Amino acid sequence: MSYQPLIAPSILSADFARLDREIERIPSADWIHVDVMDGHFVPNLSFGAPVAKAVGAVTDKPMDCHLMIEDPARWVGDYVDAGAFNVTFHVEATDDPASVAELLHARGCRAGISLKPGTPVEPYLELLDHVDLVLVMSVEPGFGGQKFMPEMLDKVRTLRAEIDRRGLDVLIQIDGGIDSATIGESAATGVDVFVAGSAVYGAPDPDAKVEALRAEALGARG
Ligand SMILES: O=C(CO)[C@H](O)[C@H](O)COP(=O)(O)O
Ligand SMILES: [Fe+2]
Image (cartoon, rainbow, N blue to C red; front, side, top):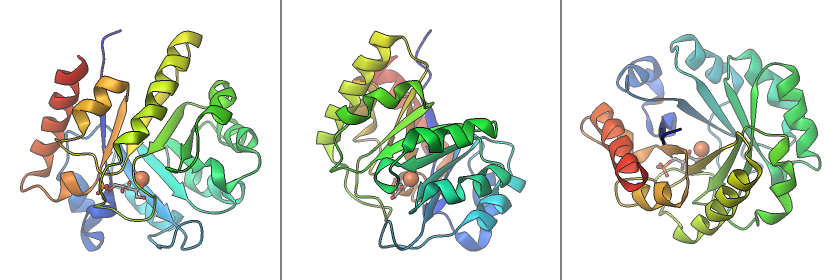
């Protein structure tokens, strides 16, 4: 099948006082990326399931929840209840990622695992049979507007080769510092889903930026 890059703007860079209007500004978005930070797993605090639920109530777009929290097994159900289409949790936050993914699948929700920059991908390749998505963090999780770490593309290369070799239906997502300067190389390396926060909401026309990013990804790999 032809390459169809998905653009997932992060509302972390939106105006939290006007989330409904901020989401209306990006009709071309494929997914809405919702960054949940608990102030423990990462040093920053964003919001939790009640805000995710409010977001889910004002959009028909797939809601992609990125949980940067401790003890994800305890909380993932709240994000399913909030209307998530996909819930991604960090492998560093649990001893048993496969069982967290199973909890999500049992509730009819897609499951993703995420890796911080310092976490190697190889030990987690065996989980590819249990998940729908792998999120490669290209910044330290916790804050928007950071600089892309190009060395993270080595993990994307490894994942792309393994997913294709095993013929799996698993998406590769990248998050952190994605903009016009970094999306092309990421797409060419094998990324399917691109999170972009500051690049989209920092643009004068956020929706035009979503379309431009998608065209740049397609141009690099299409
Ligand atoms: O998970 C995240 C931070 O931990 C955000 O999704 C990410 O940083 C998006 O912001 P930007 O595109 O500005 O880097
Ligand atoms: Fe994120």
